Amino acid sequence: MKAKKSKLYETNFKAVIKRDVKGLYSKALKGGIDNFIGNNLIISYELPENPDIILDTEKETVEKYIYKMYDYFVIQQIAD
Image 1 (cartoon, rainbow, N blue to C red):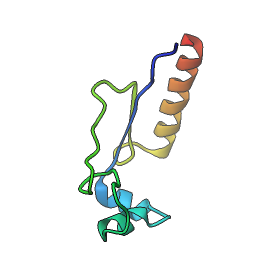
Image 2 (cartoon, rainbow, N blue to C red):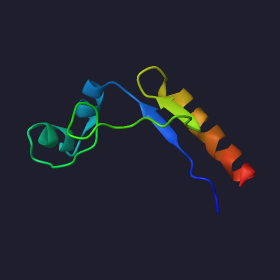
Image 3 (cartoon, helix red, strand yellow):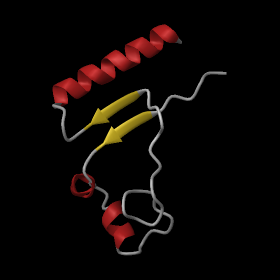
């Protein structure tokens, strides 16, 4: 059985709401979605202790983000 891989996507909560094209965060903040998981909402999100990859969408450029993901998946293919 393969070990579960964990990824961590970091970003500012205001940026998450701004990028939410479906409007789920706004709806949850208004009480329209029960048991919604996220920052400052009904259920808090527990960060992984040792993520395999951390992608910080506030501090990294899109190009660096893509290279980092590519490297991660290539390494995972080789390891698996």
